[in-house]
Structure formats: structure tokens, C-alpha cells
Length: 357
Image (cartoon, rainbow, N blue to C red; front, side):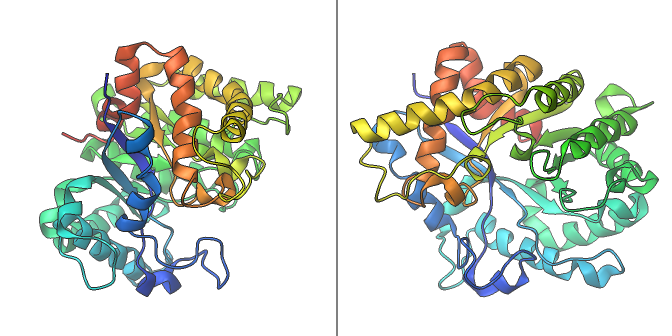
């Protein structure tokens, strides 16, 4: 059975705008342009090793420079909207790395938004987004404001919760990016409280959908074994998250959280004994986290995401990383999910999480 893939988490940016990225420095591992053509290059081996094919992707904002002091802080995120609009409209500029036919791949867009500023500011911002997006507006399915590098209490403020409630009433999803492994489980704990507050007193059909990204990986040691106390706390928090029907979990981008894989020149060809052994070891490491995620959220609320090009950090490089992650999670879902649930994992759950029709 051939199952189309919707990649629920990719980032794109043109080389002409890298200076607008908040995290960008010269020499960064992700320096330079990362375009649709680069993404398709990363995924091209899929057609050779599988009967699956790529249906499209959800674009996730790339953390452009921004601030909350005034509308001037929206300039670069709105400029990012202009960029992804050119992709979605099939109107490339010379050298940007996409062609008119690539527009059909962009199934949804998640933009930056000033979530901590409250619902009134969110409404002003989305009005500007709608005016600027024009024909691309129907593709705007949600917003993201990274809290992984923000101080404690950010996502629990009254204004933040107010924004989430407004997003739910307006039909938008919220992409939640926390860093439970590097920053600490306190971020995951606050996320649980944030969701509880955002849903409190709200009719179920108006509760904001929360899509959690990969930085909630379990506290595991280098061999994939749980660090007992942190793991138990992590599992308790995950169970609370999984008990909320509107919360989804992306199985995405674990390479940036694991021990780095060898470079692409050292990994061996696909199907070689060396590559097979590497994938088996990686699957064994990730398996504990994947099993817990499926057990907590169920097969209807987990979705595939590559986190490209971030998956290249630790995944071996652009020629191998996407396919490696596809192999890691693909082997797991094939062994643990029914055929029907596999279809949901690879595409249907993403359509539902982001309200893509």
C-alpha cells in the first residue's frame, strides 16, 4: 500500500534574507539558502527505496528577528510571509530555489505571532497578515511563538493565555516549541498548565489545537535508557498532555537531540550493511520515546515531521538526514501501528491538526 507523506514541520528561507534570522551567524551549520529545491534534493532518495511519495509540507516559521515593543517588531516575520507567499503562489524570484509547480507542495503555513501581547494585538497582527497574504491567506493555519528560550512564566501570563483562547475561537492552531531536554522539564510543566488554562471554560469546539514539536524528547542516556527520576516526571507530564483531545505530538527531528550520526560520506549507501546497522541502532535509541508518545497520544494524534533542515544537524547531512529520520520513524510505525493508523500518521493526522481541507 502506497501512503502519501505530509511533512508537518519544515523550514525554508532564501539566501538573500538569512541576516533576518534571529539565530543566524556566519559559519552556522544551517547557513545559506534552504529552498524548496534543496528540500526536494533531501527527499529524492525516497522514490528509490520506497513506494511512498511526498504529497506536501507544512511550513513553520524560522524565528526571524522580532520584538513585542511595537508593530515595528513585526517587520521581519511579515517579510517571511512575503517569502512563503511567493512559494505558495508559484511566483519565484530569480535564485530563490523554487519553481511555479512547487506551489502545490505548500499545504499550510504557520507564522510567527506576538502571542504574549494578548488577543487585541493578535487581532491587529492577523489583520495585517491577511491583507499582506492576499490569496495565500487560506493557507495560514496557525501561529508559533517560541518559548524555549524565554524566561519562566512567559506562557502562563494572562495575555498569553488570552491569545491562545482567541486563536481557538478563530480556528487557528498553536505550534508549541519548548526545550524540555536542554532547558529543563519546568518548560514542559508550564506547557501543561498553559494548555489547561487556555482550555478552561471554553467549549470543546473552540479550544485551541496545540501541536507540540520535537523538543519534548524523553530524558534518555546515550544508550537510549531512561534517566529514572527525570523520565518518570517527563512521563507524568506527557500523560497529562495526552489526556487533552486537542493536543497533537509531532514525531520530528530527533537527530538534533541525539548523539550525532556519522557524516553522509561515512554512513554508506542505502541498503548497505553499515547503513542498516546504523539505522537499527538509531531506531533502538529513539524507540523508547516513540513508544511512550504513541501510548500517551494514541495513533490519531501523532504526525510525521522531519524538522528539515534542522535534521541535518546531527543527522549526517542533507543527502541522508531526511531519509534517515523517515527510516527511524517509518520502521517504528510499520511495526506498531495498523495500516489505517499508518495512513493517519503519514498524512491524515496533520490535515486534522492544522485544519487543512
